[in-house]
Amino acid sequence: MTRYIIRRIASVIGVVWLMTVMVFGIVHLLPGSVAHMILGEFATADSIALLEQRLGLNDPLPMQYWRWFSGLLRGDFGNSLTMERPAGPILIEALGRSAILAGISLVLVAIIGIALGVHSAVNRGSSSDRALTLAQYAFISIPEFFWCIVVILVFAAWLGWLPATGYTPLAEAGVLGWARHLVLPVVTLTLGLIAHVSRMTRSSMLEALDSQYVLAARAKGLAERFVLYRHALPNALLPTITVLAIDMGLLIGGIVVVETVFAFPGLGRMLIYAIDNQDLPLMMGGMIVVTSVYALANLAADILYATLNPRIRYGGSAA
Image (tube, rainbow, N blue to C red; front, side):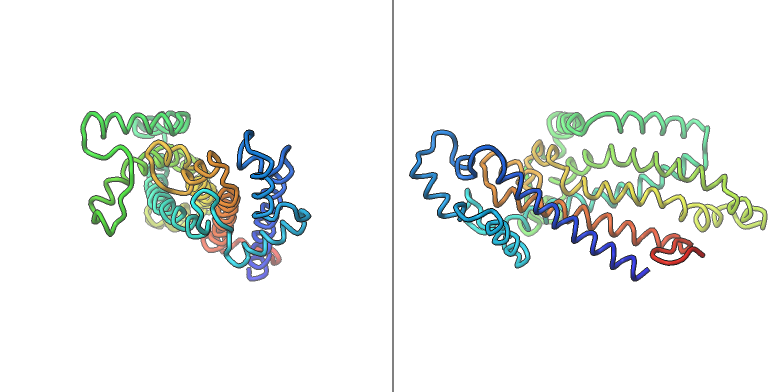
């Protein structure tokens, strides 16, 4: 197990490093100079030369990459070209706000999705199972931006219960004011993911309930609740953990639409701002942060595999 974790950590480091090479290469190998991309097509030759000198763009590419990569290792993401301040604190602030959305959403997705999946599997073929199956297909197939519009129209425009956009820090607005700005983005993020997780849990749970070890547990006269939650559910959760790990990466880096529609100042909206304003240090740093979070989420999922199912022997001989 220890050897496996060490190998997985090494692979995470390798993936993040490879992403730094790809991001740097894509930005610097595109047609036209980086300075021209930043300043625009009407920039003068003098202004382009000045910016190239300021950013060290006249140096060889390996030297430029090492200067940027060594800065990342020290936690230095460079300076934002538009805000004229270090990009690292900007990324940390944006990531923190996105982590709030992602964390609340992931907890709700895990609790509600698994509970609905178990209910459907235990009551397979019932009216509630059929209704949940129909709802799952609907919520999975409809994109997030549609739900953004629906919840804004219903809860903000028509009922006036919640603010449609914006964000207020907890220290300024208190718990209630802070939470009111999170409800609609969280609801929008969780609708499709709950359907996805519950569908996966139902499928895995049905397979577990038909397995030999569950039949043996029932033959021993064990209580049905004990059979469900001690024998069937831990094994059925293994595919669900993978889905949740993928969803964690999507929630951190893939909530661009939700943050843009609700004007939520998170990492996704910041990346859109960096791209629109050609703020390369901010954009490149944001991509590396998203990659790191996604890789760490998958590492956590692999470790949870072994925790929930001791029969799995990572890095050792099969029992």
